[in-house]
Image (cartoon, rainbow, N blue to C red):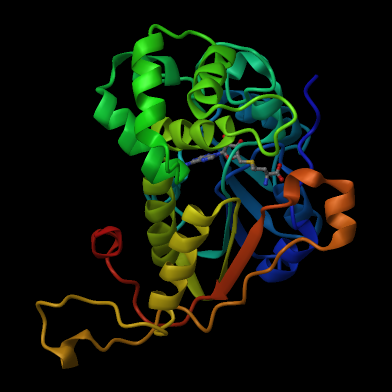
Length: 317
Ligand SMILES: C[S@@+](CC[C@H](N)C(=O)[O-])C[C@H]1O[C@@H](n2cnc3c(N)ncnc32)[C@H](O)[C@@H]1O
């Protein structure tokens, strides 16, 4: 069964973005539109992005219901393309940008999307239903490359052992096959605490969808697009992503030296692009009781200064 996606840290995200009539906000991860609709209810216009055609198709019904001057404009694009897409639409600056990184409940719960090992389905995991699937990667890559992905994106200490088992079990076509290979390689059996396949699924999903590169590009685009006083809010679901956001905001707010080691120290000093970032904001007990999937969520936000943006290429380096 596909449950509707429950927006995570919704009140906190809305408070961070301070939506109001006349404000234009980009929602880089539309999903089921929980954030976008709350921002619109507060008077803002929203340009919403999603790389998943299913999310955009469902959102079209919402957008169509809004009449001639819709407050919701949908873009079937990755958020790494947000700068080019909005500039092409004649929008030079924004009052807010929000990213809610990761997968939606619709993606997780629909077995045919192949994101979850709790539902058997094709070994797919592609958010945009395009490009190489998880099966293509796991059945075709070198053992060393598979181990590298599991280690880097799943923080899996037994990555080599799992990669060896994957290569021996090829070809794999279903999520259950992959999960069982990981479990057997790690000597897991039902009743033991956390299923070890979780880390490997996360790793392959991040790799297939280039999720960390997307995040880096999306943060740089937000810096370039936000007007002075504009707000950036990012919700992440695991430590790899949170580390990227935390480091970006620390550098961008001048809390940590950035810049190039090839330039003289004086030339590195530039006015910070953001004010002091919020601390990490996590769901409270009431939200966790309502929505256990929120348990690993972290929100960080910051307000854009009037200093020039750093160049996106410089930020991605
Ligand atoms: C956690 S859900 C967002 C839920 C949304 N905030 C809500 O309230 O309904 C994440 C969504 O972002 C999309 N997504 C993830 N990475 C993306 C990217 N790089 N560009 C565009 N959409 C992305 C996914 O397809 C998914 O629909």
